[in-house]
Amino acid sequence: MANTRERREKGALLYYEAPYRNRIVDAFGMNVTKDIPNWVLSGEVAAASDSMVTHGWTVTNTEGAGNTLVTPQTDGTLLITTGTNEYDGVSMQRIFGNFKLLADSPIYCGVRVKMSDATQSDFLFGLCSVGDTTLTNAAASHATDVASGCYFSKLDGVTAGYFTSEAATSETSIAAWTASTSWTWLEFFCEGLTGVKAFVNGVYIGSNTLTPPTTALGLGLSFRAGEALAKTLYVDRMYAVQLCPKA
Image (cartoon, rainbow, N blue to C red; front, side, top):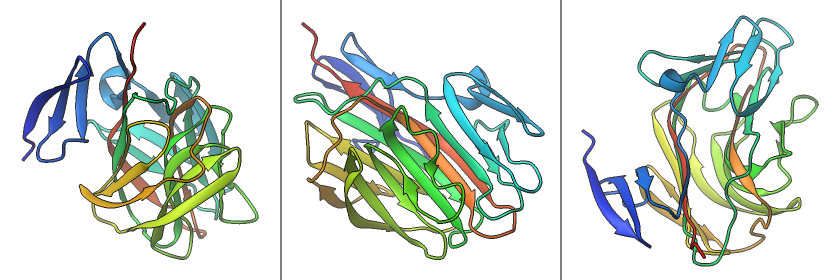
C-alpha cells in the first residue's frame, strides 16, 4: 500500500512514497520543474488502430505487420502493444527539453513498468535529448539510438539491463538490473552535474559518474518486439522533477 509523505527541499514541497525518498509523487514551488504524465485524465497519448493522437510527444511508430498501439487504460496505466514483426514498436519522446544537469539542481526521474516478454524485447526509459526520435533502432540491429541522456535499457535476446549516462554519443554504462515480467521500478537521482545514482525497485545499484549529458533533456520511452510476435508493455507511474535555483 502506498504511503505518501511530504518533505521540504530547497524551498519546495515534495510528496514522496515512503520509504523511498527519491520516488517523488508530486512537487510544488516556484523552483519546481516537473513532468508527470497522467495518461487517462489528460489524454497524454491515445491511439486507435495505427492513428496516434499525441499531446506534447514526438511518437515514432514502427509496424511491419499488425498495428502498434499506445492506449491509455482506465486504471491510469498506459498499454503499449507492438505489431507482429521484429522491431515493431514505438518510441515516445517529449517535444520539449525541460531538464538539464546543473549544479545545485537535484533531478528525480523514474518509471514503473511491466513487460510481457523480458527477453525478446527492446526497452529504454529515461531523460533523453529532444532530437532523439527513435531511442532504440527500428531495423537491422537491436541497439540504443540516443545522442545524449541518462537512461535504463535492455535489448533483445537477454534480460540483462543497464543504466547509461551519455553525452553527444559518448556513453558509459553500468550493469543495473534484470528485466522480468513483474512490475519494476526504474529510477535515478542526480544532485548536480555528475554522479547519477540508479535505483531498481527502490534499491541503490550504483552511480554513473562519467559522460554526463550537457544538453536539455525530456522524458523518453521506447519499446519494441525482439521477434515476430506482438509484445506488450504497461507503463504506470512516470515522472521527472527538478529543483532549480531562482535568481
